[in-house]
Image 1: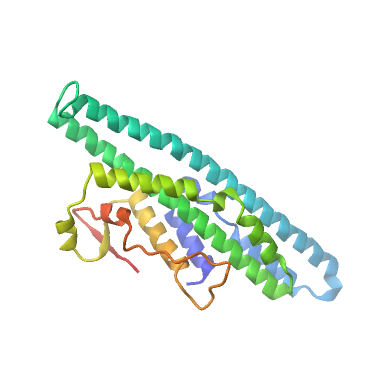
Image 2: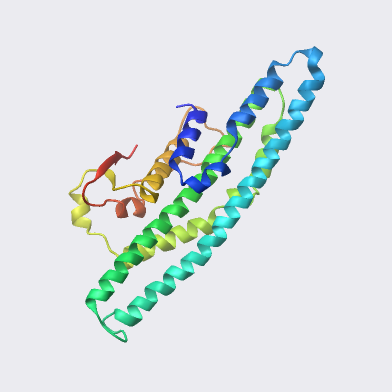
Length: 259
């Protein structure tokens, strides 16, 4: 699948409020085509198109950074809130709590588990947001250099590598912490998983399905190919993902094969 179609598919499958914050790939591609097809007599128009292209690239990077940093800050706050909720339930309804109640404890823990899994899913979506927008920038810059004979790619990629939206260490750490909480507080039955087919099973709509699509997209765009270079992201292996295990829900499952 060509990147433009893959990006459009990903935009359609992400959360509605996120859709306007992805790379304007079509606009950038149109500018590249305009620049590369301009004959010598229209040199002035070519220069203007090149300026528009560079301006749009910088605008897109600013857009990515603003969106990413806002979400990252929200996630840090939300992670703390979930930890506090979890501790309150244990301190109140747990076996050693102020008012032990197995029924109330199970109900509240089930709600918290759902919120933690949704929270984890949103963070995976943000990592995918970083991945796919970086990949889009690398591809459009490669196309620009190839079509025009320019040398923008290296300059801009060096700039992108220092941008907040590309730096996913904080979010990745929060994801690992979430997975650790899910594994410790809501353990998965290993024997039951071993009896199932190697598929992701997702019910309903919303963040579950969007996150699965994001994981599969990340695996696809980061898999090895003949076009890999120093600008490519490293491969992604989903087989050890703790989140994949938490998504193996019951009735009625919709199997989505791991690529």
